[in-house]
Every structure is written in structure tokens, then in C-alpha cells.
Amino acid sequence: MAVLDICRLGDPILRQKAALVPKVSQKIKDLLTDLADTMYAAPGVGLAAPQIGVNKRVIVIDVGEGLIQLVNPVLMSQSGSEILTEGCLSIPGIVGDVNRATEVLVRGLNHKGRLIEVSASGFLARALQHEIDHLEGTLFIDKATNIREAPEDEEHLEKEEI
Ligand code: ZN
Image (tube, rainbow, N blue to C red; front, top):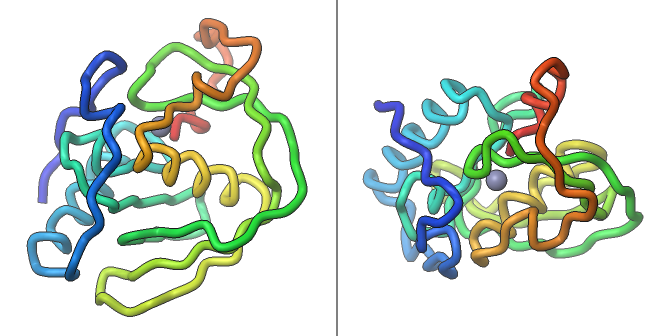
């Protein structure tokens, strides 16, 4: 479909609560494709619809284990905690340390409108929490400590932009 511009910090849409999607229509399928195209082009490992200016509860994630597309994702349970450095495609050049659950269970609709559950640990669990936060208008800088400029020479940090 299309690689779209990513909204940056300061854009009011990033602070809005995103709307539930009543049906996984063709329009939503196209949105999922645009999100994935934009995420891969960035490059990033996750993207939420508000980040491309669409106020709907739709996210995509690929932490290197395949593409996950979720509509109306809900965090059903979580356990553990771990503080790791995180960044966001909407806040380029900035990282911070965020405490997140290490294991989560997320329920949502897939691209076919079918109810699915994603059981995740480690970085995938972190990415899911980060993207679901976006749907509530919450950004990682709201939860982070030690917010700082991302060192340009540390390539690995770019992969953590979600
Ligand atoms: Zn983000």
C-alpha cells in the first residue's frame, strides 16, 4: 500500500484515546498494510495507528519473529518486571529506561477479524505494551526514567524504536 509519515511528539493525535474498531473492514485491512509498510520502512519494530494519524485501535509489531497485526488489542494479564532502554518512532533521537512486564497475554482481532491471543515474553511483550499504550495516548516518556539523547553510534538502539 503506502509508506506514510510518522506523527511526531507534539502532534495532538498521539495524546488521544484511540477508538474501538467495530469491524475489520477492507479499510482496516488497508490500514494494517500501511502500518506494516511504514514500520518496516522506518525501520521500527512496532507501530500504532495514531502514529500515522489514524485514531483507531490498530497496531502492528515485528520484533524479528514475524508480523503481528492486532485490532482492538487488550492486555489480559501480565507478570514479571524488567527495566530496559526503549525508544519510539514518534520521538526520534530520545531513549529512556522503562519498567515493563516481562510476560503478557494480549487478546485482539487479527487481519481476518478472528479473535486471537498472543502470549509473549521478553522484547515482544515490551513492544505489545508500548503499542497498546499508544492507543491510550500514553508515550514511553511518561513512564521512563533517565530520558536522554540516543547515542548515534549505538546502532542497536534504533531497532528498539517502537
Ligand atoms: Zn512508540
